[in-house]
Length: 111
Length: 114
Image 1 (cartoon, each protein chain N blue to C red):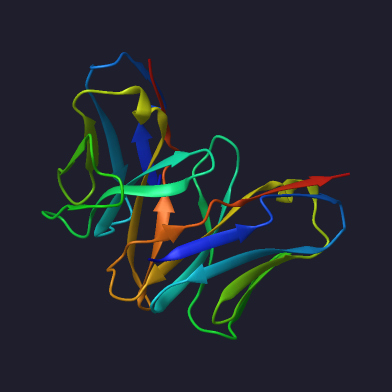
Image 2: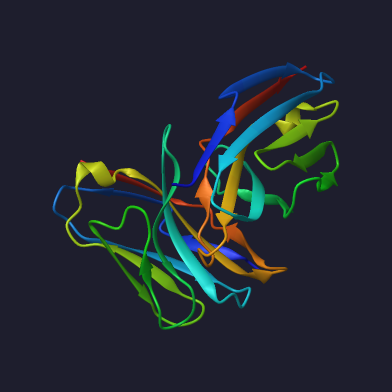
């Protein structure tokens, strides 16, 4: 069974304090790993797709990396506007377009 | 370009009532999905439609039905609502991009069943 586990469940950072969020996954074969941002009361917003181990993608203060068993979302010098829940999802091979989501990491960045 | 839109945004039902959640996308995507999101459970797939004219069950289909009305619209129906269906419902759409399907989500419908 495909599984996605995210840690920590919640993270509180001060502005400028860099950190990483973890997404561990178990799938028979990986077609793609996705990161989403979700603000309270809104739908998930697509951030990145990673396809293979060793791949990295960046967007502003966010950098996502991928290994064969996990992905990290690195947040460099975060700002209060980075506060949100970050979701990880995997698309296994042979499952057409279905995704399996983790439960997310709730990030709060304070001044 | 509105992306994915959902109606209504909020709904309160009594046990046994029925309702239909509407979803439309203007990105010309072939695939559409319905998820529910509950605290501590993450997003769970209810039904999906890989292309116009096809629908398939996801992880939690019991108590729901869907209709892919055309390429743009995908509706979710609760025939006899139960308190266990209290949740936030999200519609999403996707298209094949470099071998994967990047899904784009609507703003959600917050449903309470009393």
